[in-house]
Length: 320
Image 1 (spheres, rainbow, N blue to C red):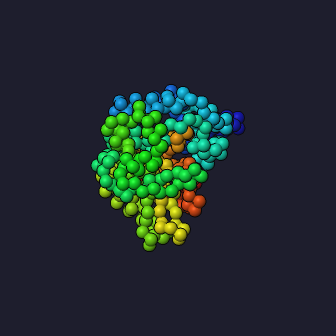
Image 2: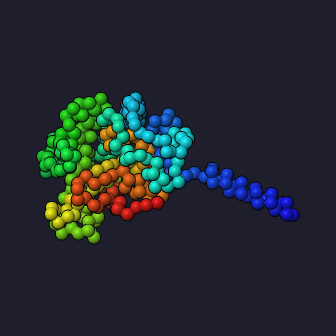
Image 3: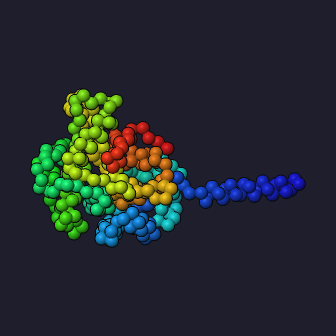
């Protein structure tokens, strides 16, 4: 019986270790530089209603990005499995990254707003046209010292020209053209923006006031959000007493339900990689977003994210 007990104990130990190895990690990440990950992501988009034209375009911009060298350093990552890296926590992923993905060295290509608009396709709508008198719209303009300031614009096209340099509009014409480019102009002006709040706004009601103000703008612009995926937009907010309370959008991506978990698709700035982030627990997404964004102003200390037009969450206190 003693010998049998030892055998059973050994077997139970082996099964517990093996089970731990076979059990999926809480989060997975892919930089869409593997054919397995790319094909799986395109299939997911098709399943969610993306048309063939959209998935073909997405494949072309991924290939465009992957054709140029990058300094993305994954030496501290676990082994790649089917195009994904698995981590036990978002903090472990953060420790493995040498720096924020937006600082990856690579030629400038699509940014996060371009990518979200491309992938959302016909599932997101706006009543605006590029030359509609929708102003004043407050477009973020980046100064030479990297400080972001608001610039007023009378139309979505004017706002788009403030946000994007002329050379980039021409360089991306092969991706966005015709009606698709018109929608891109209008949605960029609507989402990549400054938003000013009432002077009565306080730290305690900032979150609610920001969502109310954003909703009012989206309603005026006739924005209809997707129903089978969600647009996530991050904001850096300022409440310093020296200027009217305001927030500026800093990042965006698409949140897609997938079985018993979620997939977040994004582009890390203009230079960083395309990212697929798979997770089950919502706090992992909040922690990931908090890692990715940083204040765009010297005195910004409130960070938020909207999920479609239904919810706003704080990114100031997240963890895993």
